[in-house]
Amino acid sequence: MKLKIYFITGVCGVGKSTTIPYLKSLLNKKAYDIHDFDERGVPSNADRQWRKRETEYWVNLGEENIKNNISTIICGFSNPEEIMHNNKDYIKFILLDASNETIKQRIIGRYQTKKSRQELRRASGDSVNKFIKDNIGFLKTLKNICQKDKRCNIIDTTNKLPKEITEQIVKVMEQKYEKNDPKKD
Image (cartoon, rainbow, N blue to C red; front, side, top):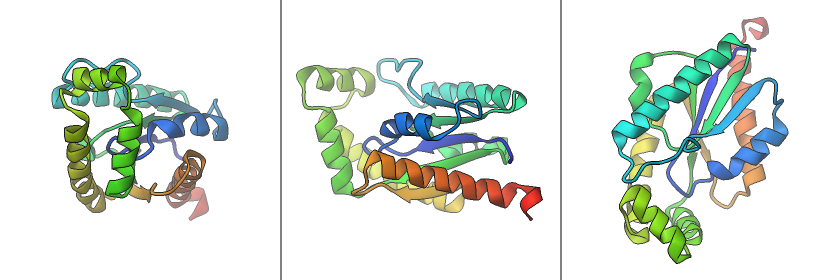
């Protein structure tokens, strides 16, 4: 089995963060190091440069883990185009996709309190409605990127529970291992 760095990506509302506890319960803790992309903190008005620095941090951690015989999974927004230049076959992306209505409802559910809306405004600079519009708009861009990138698989999370989404993620990871494992060819 080849070691990998997996970025479970997608826009807000597709189910990235909710899969973390399920991934931790399904996968061997000694074989997988699982993280939330934002766990080191998100600055006010987080921008592309911050995300690129964080992505590099996670790639470096994943490469260190590979040296120690551990695969790494990072759940959170990442853009495959921002690390395409690395052209490293051990970096894989799993894009979580969802219908526009699903994303809208999940984001509305997440930002119902005044405190949560203030935190959204601090981190992104956006209102809930603008945040919904921007996320739905960018998902189309991410899907186009992933459809052209052989390192990327897409999973539709519409009407799926976190456990179901996680089981699909694990299946995609296992398929990738089988395709890349020379012992299985």
